[in-house]
Length: 214
Image (cartoon, rainbow, N blue to C red; front, side):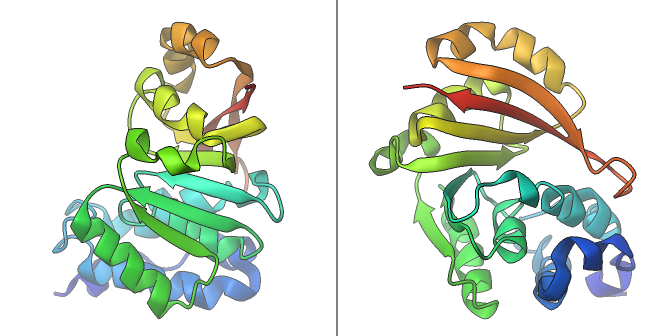
């Protein structure tokens, strides 16, 4: 049995989320299913739930980002959510910031193979991405770190009035409470948890949103 044999069937919701870009989403999902484990991008149990747990979980956040904006994805890794969002939102410029060389190689290969001209890939740690300071309209991240660690990495990259849009798990509200000190330090306002995709996809996504004030 090959990894592709384990890939779950494409959910019906995928076509609605990606529209006329669904073929690109299919190609990326198949590539990740086929090569993701061997290249250390995803764990051995993820292929059978790749569409619902990862691809759609990322794509459902696409409408949250500003049209024509410049958005950073911190710790883009396998391209979740960065490449998925770049497929879903070709009207947004995506800066994928990832420190690991092998993951940067993967992101570069996929962006080129899929013809994603709205993607820039930067090999760097978030805290070292100084040239993007106050440069981005929004920053996102998925499964990178707890908020009290993630906020100091991400908030400095966002322009005054821009937004953090961070994909989190079920403990999102507790993470906000534990990050109270760094939230004040980085002058974040309107910090809240939103659940998106309820009634739309099998596994709704929790997003922590906050406005960054310079």
